[in-house]
Length: 330
Image (cartoon, rainbow, N blue to C red; front, side, top):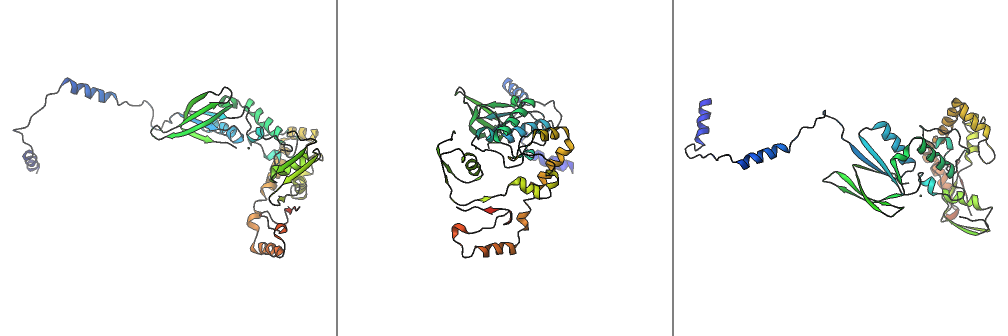
């Protein structure tokens, strides 16, 4: 069988007229050049490649990413560009009267950076900003942040597999180029005494501003498109609920600020501190199941209540339940 196959092969080759081209010096050089373009990486299979990551914005999300990458990755470099002269994001930018967080202070903090020294049950913007700046200093986050720099351009280069970035230094207006393999977008958004002030909008910020400046202004005009829902005071709600036992042991003044003795107790008694934090968090997060608890009967009941009322006074059921929120009318 092998002999017959060889005969078939020979029949297809014109051995008599076959010619052999001589090997020239040029051919040898081409072979050597081709061989030089191939190299073996002296690394084990699966060795991670070095990557460059760039983040936009040094608010809470950007800062948390610095720590997460430090804990989880190797063979990388990470740099955040922040347009403001300081970190903090929304807590650096917003300084309107009454600006504060609507989440209890001890639940609006990094789990890896607990702060028993919050002065109020709901922290004002300046205190949250101080918290973020302080942890940046102590955790050496500023090494990974360039403030007063804005990402003005970002284009994906498919051939190179990188983001090509244009960066503007807002201090001297110079432009520079940068690149990264992964681009992370973490962008977050008066003097009034004795004056006539107009406030447009009645979202959470509008509500905070109006309540804070009303005693000091000459005249206050509040433009709103539609009525809003107002939650009952959170501290009183917590006191009346299952968190009441823990809350009864917490010292607060009439403005919701923790007493000096209470802050000292938070610092010296970590077990009590954690019980307080967990109790408040459980109560706050417990609002969300109300969405699934609303049945058709309750919704139909609220609809029937609306019958015959003018549009501007019609009661609409809140997702948080009609017993939890109250409606405010003009």
